Amino acid sequence: MFFDYDPGDYVTNPNQKEWGIGQVQSIIKNLVTVNFEHVGKKTINTDEIVLEKHDVKA
Image 1 (cartoon, rainbow, N blue to C red):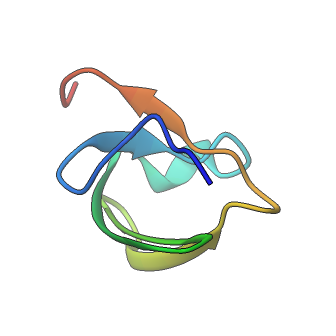
Image 2 (image 1 turned 180 degrees about the vertical axis):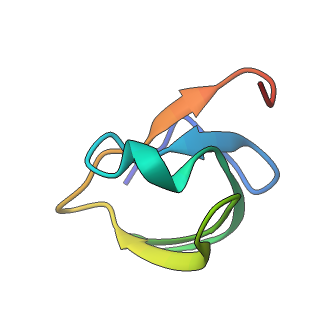
Image 3 (image 1 turned 135 degrees about the vertical axis):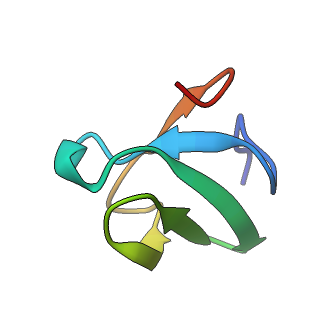
């Protein structure tokens, strides 16, 4: 499985914009752990949600 982001990169969840920008903590198979600015750590199943990458934290 290929992702266009790595640990340390910044992403948003397009289904939950109110979570804010998050930093990728880890990627294990299809599970990505992200620390979002407004809701803390969330584990995202990338089979269900495609995270959007940001070049830098806004």
